[in-house]
Length: 207
Image 1 (tube, rainbow, N blue to C red):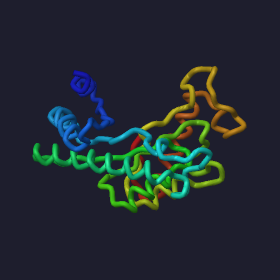
Image 2: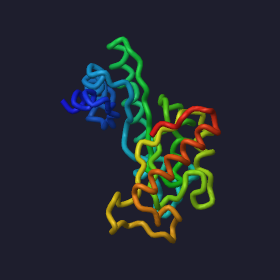
Image 3: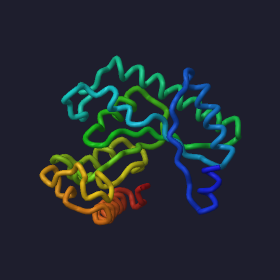
Image 4: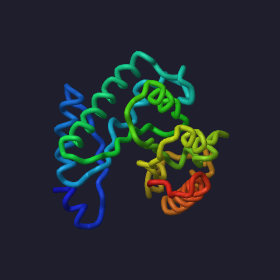
């Protein structure tokens, strides 16, 4: 009902899927319901990089992650990807599957997934105001790192930390963007992303 109500308003839903006991089978059943309603893009898992990240680490190095936990997550994600693909094949259609992370400098998460050949189509990145700008976060150009992965970049979470609340846990000392209200931050960051995307390959970033 939600998907149909959104479609009636010219909105497209992006489902984030979570596995059941059998990742492939449960994801196939869930994805089929969405595919039958015209959905063709999915995310699998939700910020699972944080599950494997070692305490106090930045996330920009593979050594920052607990590899035992990561391998369990990889197996689950692989099953989910296969499940979505199976549902699409049964319906005679194609889908796009994305994996996200919790933002910051956690891009080594994608380095591991690419190294281990997880079947996914796009990088879903999450970005909030205390993280700074995507091309200048703690002195690092995260945007260029994401571009180097060779997959489309989707900003599947983007907002000022705390939303429109004036009592937000975002301190200007962390990043200049922390001092912006919600509307200003979104206008600033979407404009920046549009410029970065156009300068990279001439096509707009998904947000």
